[in-house]
Amino acid sequence: MTKKQRAEVIITELEKLYPEVPIPLDHSSSFQLLVAVALSAQTTDKKVNEISPKLFEVAGNAFKMNLLEVEEIKYLIQQIGLSNTKAKNLKKMAELLIERHSGEVPQTFEELEALPGVGHKTASVVMSQSFGVPAFPVDTHIHRLLKQWKISEGKNVVQVEEDAKKIFPKNLWNKLHLQIIFYGREYSPARGKGEKDFLTKMLFDK
Image (spheres, helix red, strand yellow):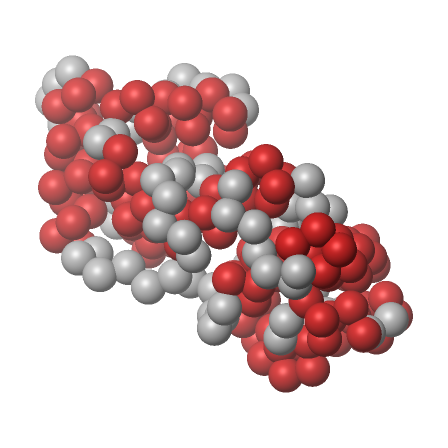
């Protein structure tokens, strides 16, 4: 199979498995999604979803978050990794959203990536899932699987993202990146032996 043919098989099979893809992080606004994605670094979406309701109850928007002290934010998110750094980032993020954007989440990559704790992946998730802008956020599942499927030889997420955008149609990016994440979690976990990973077998079965 050529790379293009493998890409077509991936698209077809993932669409069969996941015709609908819910956003894994619970939220009810673009601000809450931004916070949830920022919190998800080096921890699981499940863990973020466990702690975010209490956080959003008292700090569901930039103005309310800004009223909290860093220590109060840290207390609310203490169960997740890097809580100290993340608490400082959330406080500063809220301040800058109010100062620069009237408390609203900006709708450009540049403005999002200028916020504390917001890298390109976080910005890509918010742009794609809150604002519908085509983006291809690369997490560990996507990085691993696109290498495994020989779609990308990228040594880093930047290269993997570029390769993914070249091979997959732009109108599918926002849904497809979630489908790959769901597939990775269910059929090809990093620590698993890959017994259930039928898609890799299908792509490379001689």
